[in-house]
Image 1 (cartoon, rainbow, N blue to C red):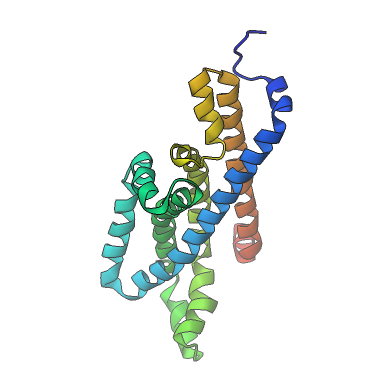
Image 2: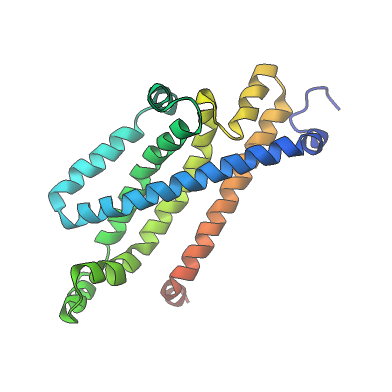
Length: 218
């Protein structure tokens, strides 16, 4: 076996305590960032859907944030929020917002107007109509946004290592510094596995929450 292999199972077994800790940190900050972004994006998208002239500024503002290079954004946030987890978390939330706002807005706009008229005819107030009719109708778009935002966030977490909190990015950076390829490849594979697992979980939750789509597909 070469001294510097692309993958080493002995490295994985001997370093599993560190790998599992970094994997947990990576997964936790990913889920936390996406959940916070989701909570912020739903009211923003609802506002954009209801007040049409605000849709342009809201979408433009979130899109502008997404164009900032991740290294630059984390570097800008670090002097304000400090080195470490908080700066990375805020940056990840800002990046996830553009995906979630766009998909949630698209989902809300796709709800059949006839269904909304029927809800008004039944005496549904604005809040009840949104909660019981618009939000369930927008679920497919919202879930698609959640899946995309989650996968992209898994990748972006690794960049957070430049400000002291990068999860599996710690291994990637260390591997580059020491030219140890197995460390880089192991971290990369764990990122891919984490993204796949989270994507499947969201898909399964979405399937459970939208039983009418299963019936339509059948």
